[in-house]
Image (cartoon, rainbow, N blue to C red; front, side, top):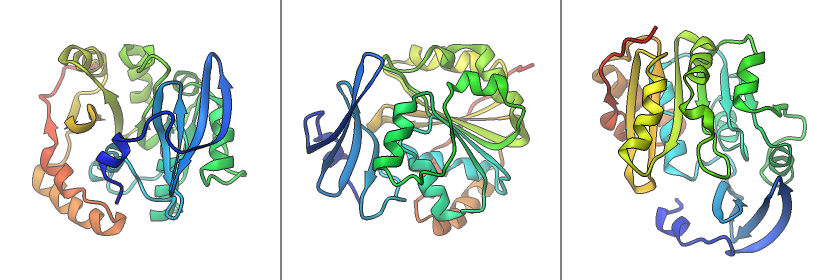
Length: 262
């Protein structure tokens, strides 16, 4: 287990430099220290981190917590990952159930290339090189679970406060599906700026606060989520299957009042 303290101690200069790519005005580095390898985006370290000896393992607690999406949608048919990055969700999900189809979307061609060179993603794996908005605008598919973990150099891209974007996510979600959004917020207003447009489309939202990392996960669905006892029962089963503790996540989910989404 890699502790949060160990991850927090890493800086943009930590470890050995393996590669540098220029994306727009940003220098993206791949660095390695011992058994850990990651990308740096400018002054922001520790993106797409991988444990070399166990590449399927989810390193960040928030990525483990995102797997709580399976508590809401017990038998997913097809998954969509908006914000592929280094492919940590894909590697983990392939190790759990390689039969579930995953559609992956990443706005940076360079990041896709780096993921295949340094982060155990097969060269043959297809990743749509589009922004999340562009993909949703052109796709007609529907998905059981939609993961959304998208950031740019300034933090959240503008779409994360755009009602049109959330309405597109809603349109691509199956009736019994769930979309999970990873957000990093520094104030209550930051969270409100995302929640208000989100709730214009989604009547049901569960919130999970991860204060040690400043992450807040938002699980949005068309239908009312299962009651707590069902979520806890599913969490026990999934924790055994996935090898991660979803029981604590289930206990800390907060169901927001139903919105008047249209």
